[in-house]
Image (cartoon, rainbow, N blue to C red; front, side):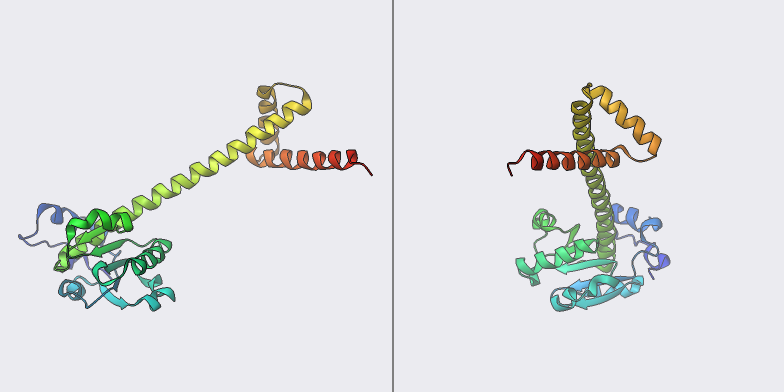
Length: 224
C-alpha cells in the first residue's frame, strides 16, 4: 500500500510543483501499490520506490501479452529499450487496462513525441524515486482526464445515433399519417411517455415495422 507518511514529506530540494503533488494525499494515498516496469535494467530511482511503499514488477512483452498488467496501478516504460513496434503493443495493452503510463527517456526533449505515442508523463532515466512518484501521479491525472473525455465522447456519439433514429422515425410517421414532422415528433414523444420508454427505443420499433411493411410491399409487387 502506498504510505502517505513516506511520500508526503518533500525535502527542501524538491521544487514547488513536486511539493504540491506530494502534499495532495487524496491523489496518492492508497492508489499506488504496484508499478509495472518494462524495459532494460531497473534504474536506481525505480529500485528506491519501495521506500514509498510501492512494489515494482519487472515485466517482459510475453508477460504483458498474458495479462500481467492486470494487477498494476501504473506502467513505467523505458522507451529507449523498446522498439517502436514493442512500444505500440505495450501502450495498447496499457490503454485497454486504463492504466497511466510514464515514459523514461534519455532525451526528455522528445516528451511531446512520447505523449503522441500514448505516454501520460515523461521522465529522464536518472529520475529519483520522488520524481517518479510525482510523474506517476501526474500520469494518473492525465489518464483519468482522458478516460472521462473518452466517456463523454462515447456518450455524445450514442446521443447522435439516438437522435438520428428519432429523426428517421419522425419522417416515417409523417409520411404514413400525412402530417407534419413536428406533429409526428410530438406523437412519438407522447407515446414514449405513455409507454415509459426512451424515444429512440420507440423509434427503433417504428423503423423496424416500416422495414417489414416495405419488404412485404416489395414482395407483393414482384412478378410471379
